Amino acid sequence: MKQTLVFIDGNAFKHYLSKCCNDKLDRYFKYKDFCDSLMNNDEELIRIYYYSALPAEYFPGMTEEEQEKTQRLLTGRKIFIKNLKQSGNVDVELGHTRFKGRDGNGEPDFEEKGVDVKLASDMIKYTFVGDYDVFYILTADNDIAYCMKTARDFGKTVKWVDISTNQPSVRENLSQEADKKIDLKTEEVKKFSATPK
Image (cartoon, rainbow, N blue to C red; front, side, top):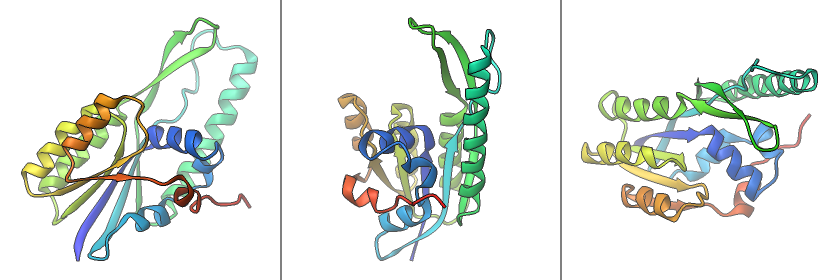
């Protein structure tokens, strides 16, 4: 059996689920079952690596309403991360969220930091550490393409799961650096949603 790892850019996949399915699927999504469904018959899923960042707990100029909203979001994401870690063979790696300022409508604007670096670093690490054969990559980030190439150069089979990036150049670049591109079917993905208890 081929030893297989799955690397998930959590924010990008969350956006995919929100856009293509509905906004409830991220929190209750059955990640382990979904990743198992990606495997070929000769592949064994060893571990899933999920990369994300928790919402910023504080940012300058927060209103009382924004503080309450932030606490709700933070509590919800912490519960999600805890459940994800307990779902089986899932490691969660967290970056941090940086406040960029406010947009034209006065809404706070944020960006994740450190998440892509962690994903890229782990891909390179497991290219050389451990006897892994196949990498599945769920991302919409063009910067990961070179890591995919490096893994392939050293004998790994790299499969990119297209999670609907809107940029044709990014899609083309990631496709070129993968041994195989996997297109998700919305109806199939929806099967891994779960009803909250």
